[in-house]
Image (cartoon, rainbow, N blue to C red; front, side, top):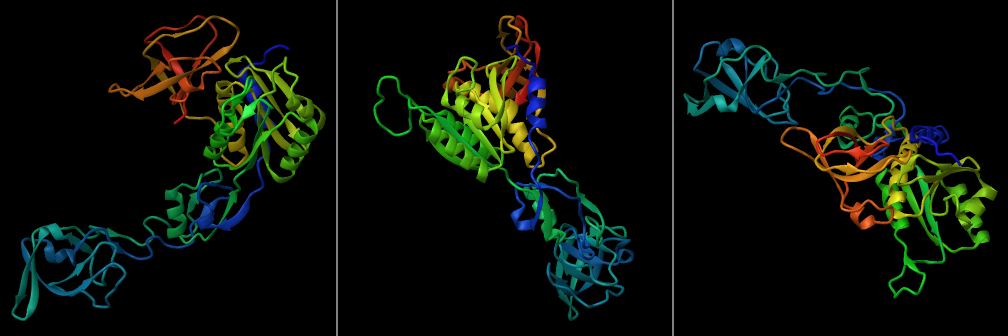
Length: 405
């Protein structure tokens, strides 16, 4: 089978991954999800003119010449109000966020004041700064007005977005749901429990890693554990998973030479495309559907499984959940060490450690081992360097990098 370019393989996966149907939720349940419909402002934010600082509410004409002494006729804290109309020579002590009293057109900061105490039966203050009309006043609707477009479809609900929804009283919001994803692996040789290994056995690690990767993507993940090499049992597990989930991720059994229960069963119950992608690691990859539910078949070597998830499954799962930015952030970095390779017709996806230097640029060095089975070396990588086919890159060369962290 001829190898296919990475962009072509990614297009097959993305085009075959449907976007989930949105639904309306209370805004408190929207955190981490993606907005599906335009959100409009419904109220003024702030709801009324208020002060941006602690200080004294004044008529700007009264502080045109300073220092000046004024009579303090009240105090207003945030959450309180006064019906006193400020007259000439008067001031009201005011706290940040409190509504602006009638007759006031500016606020002098408390740092520019000196309390004089009670003089001739009235509390007095000396103000030492002149202010123009409007100073330190936040007008009603300065942040949001009814009908303002707050968020467009595709906006992730971050903590800041959630705060805006709360402040603007947008109680209901249409969002894409978190994808429900089932993760499983197969193999009689895999061991989950803590016991000595018998000849031929290996400790299961891919599933644990992929479960974490799926959860990190924002999906609701179901760990189906290890399914033994029994075609009937695997078929049952896969069909049950397809009935209850939006996507399925498997690890292992997708190489051209494999005769694995995963390949046999998926070939029977699913519409699968078995790919050889022109990348290293993660050349073998499978994608298809069981009753319309996407199935991502990751290779069995742990580093290949990790890279394959990043290149194919993660962008597709993000698309399912309404994201418009599907790929990891990318930068052009400086290779501080040579990124060596040989020509082989593939793009090499080398695991690297990335840092930002004093020059403001991203700098990368390769992790100590690049084998597709060497997960311990890859675990500390926080980026993937995209090294084109050829003889590699020299120290000091520019290289495209995907930032994982």
